[in-house]
Length: 609
Image (spheres, one colour):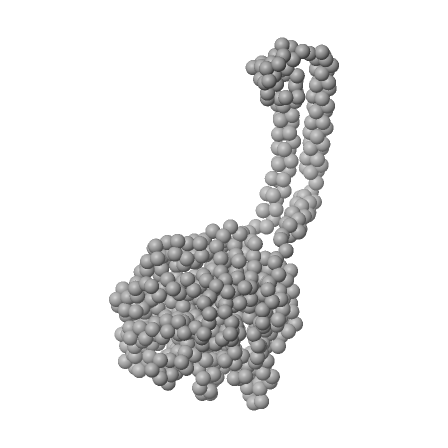
């Protein structure tokens, strides 16, 4: 499988965007903050003085504001003038008017004295601030900020304890060392690569979402709201654990315990955060049994739920973790949500309901499935865009690559993760694959099987690197195919794997391009300059891994090793490590256990068969 610590954090289900690292002039920001702090002190002293003068200093036209004769109503503690009437109508006879007036003047004088003292104190504090150096002011400001942060932390509610649930049986987490010396040598090399990547991130980017390896500094990307959420740490935990890098795993766990906070004012991608953070935290919990990972996963999931507050229940692409306000990508067709994004939540949300007893997560994803089942599909295909306000399809563009891919993957994996009891998911998957075969899968003149894209009734003979995951999906779904077509789909998976290997082998660096064409005499090669790049995408390696698991053909291991030598992927695996009968990998390669639900009903669901 892929090494999450080395994956690009742009996700595999949408076309690659190139977010830049945010940088801010820290010393200038601090200086501006210091100056504002001093000005605010002076301003507050001035306002205090003004208000004191307005309300308490003597007025030459003494008590003119009471001339309306309503003083006994507006200010009951002041005696009415002689002969005036109280609201009850009785006449007030004064006997001690002079004494009360004297007492009132004393009170006013006392208040004026207090205001003068407070004013002088504020001015003196402001003068003292002005005498201090910038470093001293910075230190004071930082101390105040830290105090506020600590106070806020103390005020946070203690999370409710989660209900105890049976822990799924965890098998195949560690398979020991390989018997074959050459395989052991390669596995050790892959582990060394992983440790090198982790140590570099630990040194130069710790706590940031990603590391810029050439610049040797960390940065955060827009899919995580430009906040330091330690995406690389969360994404890498399960790989560290399976590789036996337990000291590194412990460092990551400590950072998460002390620093991972989802109450930040950050707008994040619901899809990316779900597959990387929710999936990564759940996998770390199931592998290690450490409760903190489960708690953090649930805290995050609660922050994602407001994204579903749309007229149709189809979630927004992005949500602000603090305010809960959601919106869609500006470039998506007519304000639509994206099939691969709202269709890639099922695995994680089912596990959340299982672990918490909260039916909301299961109900949200099942509502999406039911809504899609009622909709017309052109040629049986699912368009990539769906408007969450109207419930109508956007542009009729169907792809098994970017914008569509993991929707089909999660239909299959929902069935597998349910211990093959979710037959509705399996039927939906089979119907979708049948339409894809009929309309999108073709063979080139040179004999290469490829998956094109359907755009407004026309097949574009282009295949993206993202689409290469489908070879592994076809192999994974072969067993259980209708009409005894298991052999057919295993063969189809092998043909897709071969085509994607050719896209690598036909380049100078032996790394596959972002997209490749099958027309005008060109096959499995990039044509446009903006397609001739490689960004550590894992889909080809993923298909090699599944094909090795189901066929044990040594060429897949060899192809994986060739890619590892130039791109640092890992593929060295044995059948008893993470057996597929017990584990299902989410779309970000985070393993989640199969839930044997034969005698269990998920909260909010109908009884499982």
